[in-house]
Image 1 (cartoon, helix red, strand yellow):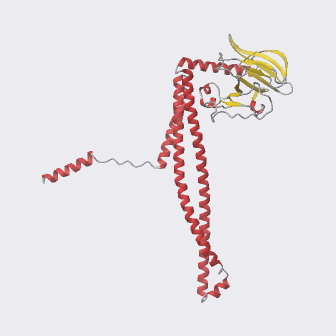
Image 2 (cartoon, rainbow, N blue to C red; image 1 turned 120 degrees about the vertical axis):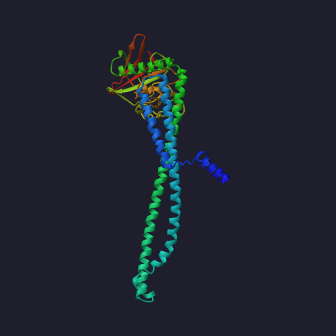
Image 3 (cartoon, rainbow, N blue to C red; image 1 turned 90 degrees about the horizontal axis):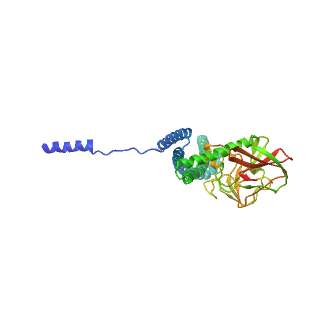
Length: 383
């Protein structure tokens, strides 16, 4: 009896303390819901970070949150593709079965259709009741065939739709992976530029703010200008400043086209077919940068080969780097080349100008093109 009690005691102890823990596998819908919730949390966190003070640690935290958010979106998209793949496999199986069934029925229905005429049924049937039964049977077969055809057509439509959705998701996945790579690169570039030093980061921000404010003031007509005289297409009007300055992080020409008070996309005026290198994205030659798409007929203000650093509008740099803290729209194009010479893109009247306070002044030249309501501005230059 004592042995039985001991055995029962061991069983009870095993049940309460050593029992296995069974965890239900996470379903596809549960996984997608969990990922959606995590994405929402990181989007909220990113929103809070963007509203906080502009410090290096905050910017790095933003990059980390963006990277995590994009990683979650990639996982979500991959899960959707996997789920859709299962549905497509099921549809393929169903489509194959329906096609086989329909094909086999076609032959039989064709044979029966030859007896579709009532008088033929009467001739080939032994009596009237048999003819009526045959007629009703044929009607049921035809009705079943129509139903089978409808199901087959619906399965084909569903299959095409699901395949289209899968291709769309695949494209979305590739785009998300590209964004993730760009975000990681942007973080690495920031750490390299600042050497993880807050003071250097604030200096970079100050230079970009100074440049942005000066350009906005110049566009508003607040620059100090003097008229130089007439210039023709291709005439030298300035040279690009070499190296960084108080309102520029490096050598480049900021080229603006203005119509009245509004800036225009320079690519709508500059000619295509020139030699260039696109360095407007995560790295020179990467596929994530701003599009280089000139469609006009004007000559370029600098000699090729053009190094294209930033485009017009909501650029890659605005969307992916810390400059987005200063401005959301780039009002010109940033370009450079081996030559520092800057040339007029059209005939007009040349003005030399500058804007700023103390020793930090942004120098520029402006050409008023008298044959139109356009003028062109060339910034970060020496006269």
